[in-house]
Length: 67
Image: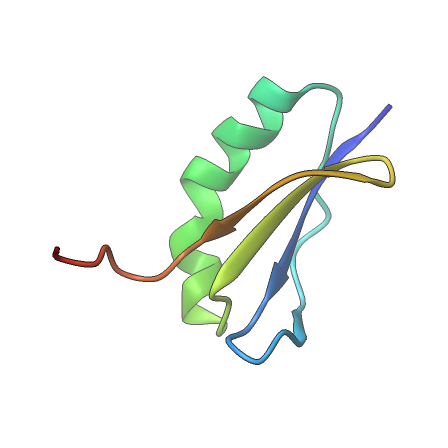
């Protein structure tokens, strides 16, 4: 089983990401912790973590909102 991040821009279009196949969720989350700023610089606004074909979660990469 592989854990892989994909990325989308604000309109839902794919943003090209480096190859990032991970053997477990923890390794995948560590990787995105290092790479998310680079992906935002490429235009990504959403990160999507999937295990094979199942989406685990989607994560907004935008700035935090003040309440």
